[in-house]
Length: 386
Image (tube, rainbow, N blue to C red):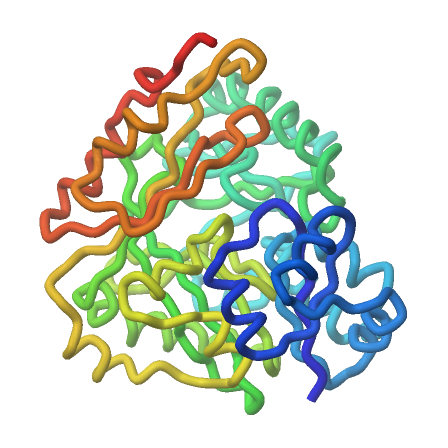
């Protein structure tokens, strides 16, 4: 079987680099990243070899960024692959496929030009988001017609800004979804469908929020307790997905909410795991390199792993860039921020001028409040004038 990894320079973790080298993976990258990977001993494909691998119907593919979808669109002749990607990227189409399992759930797709005339149904708590998008771009909560009038223009503006940066297959401002807001705990998961189409879970992390209005990707944590609690319901959801459409050697990152013990999908992202290093959380928590497991078709023995796990909560913290941050005149007091952690397993600075966050940190604590305190932190205190 052919294997290929497509990499974009926005974030490549050391855990991923380790898996690429250990498994002698064929990688395609462009620009400065291409040379950096070669210097690290990673095998980088030519354009011709990349096109050949992408067009094969028997190729295992992984990418680290949704930007890589455009590489597949331009270079692959595998229409089944493209259709499988779009099956998940179009949030509305995906949820319509599984809607018979969620008869109580309200969802509606609206074209951008029809947003002004949308009539908000009474008595429902709702979320709006772009039909094709990722991260927390253009997501707002509302419940009345007056609230809708206050937020809709800002949503369009935000999504338009990102759609000018990313490919239309990644973020699009053409259509939006209005769907029922699900009260309940949120979880982020990495998994893949193996060579036989069987779902394999590689990571489950709890994604808490500061309050019901919070939509930030700020704190994710996992533990033996989280894995034990959520493994069965999430496997059941993945089996539902695989019953609707067959996937083989296909990785996914997805978010779900749980209400009355039922799993409700928020979104499913194809051919990748959690972004900006989130997929490395099981590596620090349980010694599982998710990329290595996927590349080799391995399945974690979760019950054995959990039984040997120490009584820690392991977290991935995404430090938010201060509001109206000016990278030309300001900088971040990273040393001051680092002192807030009980223990740092890994710390990665991020370009605060380019992204909405200035670092990612892997940490652990037996005290869960040590991890969730970042939900209520004022990150403006780490702003410094140059």
